[in-house]
Length: 272
Ligand SMILES: Nc1ncnc2c1ncn2[C@@H]1O[C@H](COP(=O)(O)OP(=O)(O)OP(=O)(O)O)[C@@H](O)[C@H]1O
Ligand SMILES: [Mg+2]
Image 1 (spheres, rainbow, N blue to C red):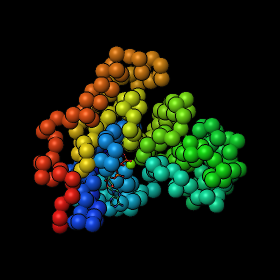
Image 2: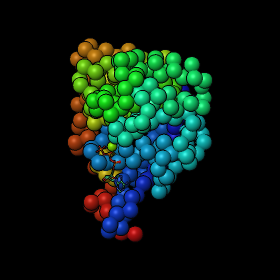
Image 3: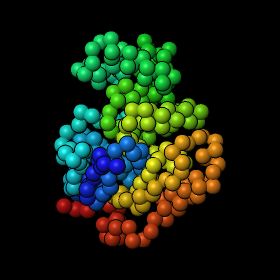
Image 4: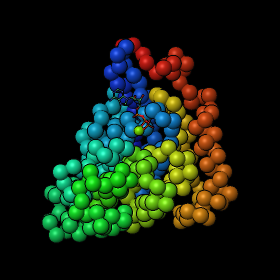
């Protein structure tokens, strides 16, 4: 499988009151074309910082990101992001339909754009909301609009930051299965951040486990479950249960050799 995304020694430091704050540090991994890779890590460890750096929205302090072998320095055209803060990612002055059409305005004609948006809204179960405005929808519905917008765009690489965090359990299962279906039908490569260990194993071909801030890769696990997943039978299979236990173990007590030196790690704040 050819490599689509290559992240090498990636680090990001934010300016802090008393110097700089190292959010991520020395992160290296690759994602193959067509793969779905899930990222799990403790809250605040730098997952969103990582996704923002990969998307070209944030310039990394150290290291580099390559997409199709090209250095990422701005947001690549064949990439879409579903942000964690969906409420700020939709345009309040545009209808739901127009929000979903928006990224397609240069690539497609009007009729085609409409049809793509219609299909994507149908996929996320929001056909009836096409004419509404984002602020007329619940949080979970807004999140589904953001997902529909990314799906309608049909990017080569889809970055998703906790995309199903604010929907109810039933809708979450449906959206997980929709994502698995769509990535196969459209041959999309996906990098998805989640807090949910079970979700990472259910969706992933691989699970990257990150350490506490500054995030490092604690483990890069291959999910050796059959490609076809099912919300009931997969989740109750012995292999699934063993894998989720392994991810939980790695999250809660990462092996000592991946931990950064104590001096670097203490509060992760270092003076310049
Ligand atoms: N713009 C910023 N300026 C300064 N510090 C920031 C900025 N954005 C994030 N941070 C800090 O960097 C660290 C990592 O933040 P980030 O949002 O990447 O974590 P996360 O793993 O996505 O967290 P969560 O699980 O809560 O979504 C946090 O301590 C956060 O306070
Ligand atoms: Mg985050």
